[in-house]
Length: 472
Image 1 (cartoon, rainbow, N blue to C red):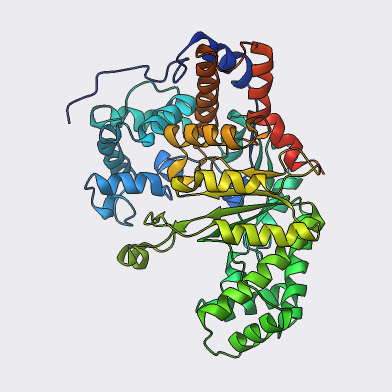
Image 2 (cartoon, rainbow, N blue to C red):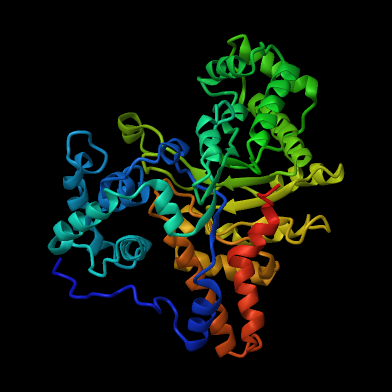
């Protein structure tokens, strides 16, 4: 590909296509802090707070979005996840790929991040790669994770954590008074539900060590889980999360679930029906625990994971070989939420769909269970994973507007493993402001800049402040 002759691509008015959009963004959205209530950052890396040093480490390692782009461009895996290629070689291969990502969100994200963290206006490509690599590394050699978070005004980040995690690094961060950013854990118990997995018995043994008592039956397991929920809560946890293909909502009795667990712990194989029954039981019990703690429960639904078994074997989980699934969603969501709602034990809930054909399904389902507990109690979450790009965000915002109340939306998150991903909040804010401004232009909403500005501020920041209550 020939050289892209352009500088200052990320202008002050990037994505803002009218004066109204510019006013909404620059006056009301631009300077707001960030609450990132779901990500996969390393609490250990934040607590240790060592200078980042190299852009490859903080920008390419673990970023399966970029890995997929490089693979699609024909880059050898040795330069993507290989252990024998150098950091610079990997960066140069990414730079080689970037021009080919035009019209993919990677092109926007890449240059927005280069601009915000390094004040780099050049397009990343082979002709600029060396100078960009050197400039970024010169800045990062003195930048720690805590400084990068503060630079983007990130007030809160919620990491994603295993129930048996010691949370020692969250404790350490909480004791560090100089940190601008509050780092809180999120309870992610997927592994507890997936009783049919080969590793299940081994995991239960680890849980036993964690809680210091044996687990022989459902009562013991629930006692252990409650122990860990209490522990997470004591360290400021305000959210749970699941990353499931679909919600489990089979009919069950506690006795039936107990028999399935005992069968599995004895080393015997269980059927798919038994696995679903057990997962349905445990999921409902967990949701009731969250309600008692006034936590928010999140459901990330619909990914079909680890499609490429060869790369899974070579690289491991999160290799960048997941995609959109076509699972049925509505009936199981309705069943679980209705059961919990019937006994007044339905916690604040956020659902995220990966299949865009299910936008209306999710948006309308959440509207079935709203009540006066808190405005927007049941949230249909922002565009997730393959949908957290301009088109996906606009479709999510439009569908939510049509079938819910956009004004109560809790806004964007990164869902990222990178400390350089926080301009995605800016990306969302620009898209939101431009969308509302387009409605003004078309006469679909009143031109009341103060009212619209307050709406923008709520969606981008204040709704999340009120919804999650992190100060509790």
